[in-house]
Image (cartoon, rainbow, N blue to C red):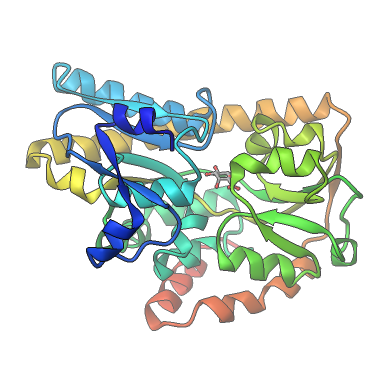
Length: 342
Ligand code: GTR
């Protein structure tokens, strides 16, 4: 993150060595912010998506709600478009209190907390309705609560539709078509295993670097939902979109525990209330956005093809056993499956 942006967040750079010397284990960032807690005023948020994306709009909706309810004492400024760094980096910054809010996919949370893995399993959700039923149940709250020891307060869960594979080379109809393709995945060992299980080569790359990597031929493809495929302009270079719909993993809005601890009990209740209401707004915007993204693709040169999902599911199934190992994880998976209709 650029120093002037850190400064605007009230942060000064601290060297990795100093933090490690203080006994903190860091993974990605060389410089992390040392920030003053902002208990009131304009709270900050990060999102990898552009300013008009439903997740950004939903958090801004939340900010307006807080602003109105507190007579202007609290508000939220979202730094959109990945301008503060990758989701992995901004999560680290959030957990140290350098950012107040962060909207991320569950994928980068997988490496932080194993209890988030059940939501990222391939073909675990049978439909968007099933995913919404699960995240709206106690399971959603329980999984969000597991983030607290990592310095993150899980506030709510947003939709992310279905992720499918797209690439620059050929239509994917059967797993054989995946052979040898270099496919970008988010920073999650589960995603790497899932894509490699299909015979492709998984390449973890931050979302913000995917367009360039596709355009330069560093990778052949990636996987994502309709809105991301369009808004990140990946469809301009990857002209085969194959409807594997292997993941219906949702996304999370988290708050820094440092910032949370600085709020009064009334403000905490208000933040939770605002987050809950933002889910309703997000789903409305999301459904619209999926329709718009599909229309954009229909009017583009992208070839979309249907896929028989069973052979993909069968090859990906072993990653369930590889990543779901503890009784607590198994119980969440069982409860997710029990909420299926089919
Ligand atoms: C999107 C998601 C982002 C990010 C991205 C990715 O669907 O909304 O948060 O995780 O996928 O693939 O990195």
